[in-house]
Length: 247
Image (cartoon, rainbow, N blue to C red):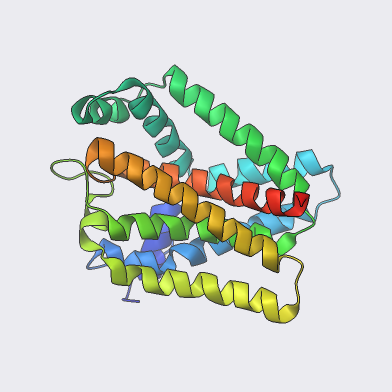
């Protein structure tokens, strides 16, 4: 938790211009990633309390999150979908991912993901703690990916310093925060406790799947891959909750 880590995390992941010194190492911001997700979840929590239909509230939650994060992770998801869908080699995949144009794979993936999230959040609005937990969990998955993998591109890229400076020890603080949140739900006897546990399991499985695919194709991760992990691990977390509740 070095000086500038908190403000650096907000400047990296959101449009909030928090004042503060630049971190000596970008990896020092990783400790605060779950907290940034928690703050974003507070906006979702406020929207969830509005006297509107469930689908309107869930749509506004997703739109607000996209605005507050500058669509940062959604852009990564689109680039990964185009790159892995249209490229068959490392060089071709990285070239397509860097291209600013949006292809069919990106459009299909984005629409399907957002549609799923709208319907999933609409079903889970009664579990208010999850609106805080899942955004924090998704950003914790980014920390895990950055800490365990090398950077795939040669030279510097958007996340090159973040990934190259991080190590397994950077996961400890974020994972502890997630564990404390779950423990808090348990001691409160919250009905969100078991859904939160299921969310963690599904998010970890999705993160592992994407990392395996990225390492096999690229030899590591990029900023776009980290963005895709955030979005898809959140979506998987919601799926895990819905499956648990169905049974």
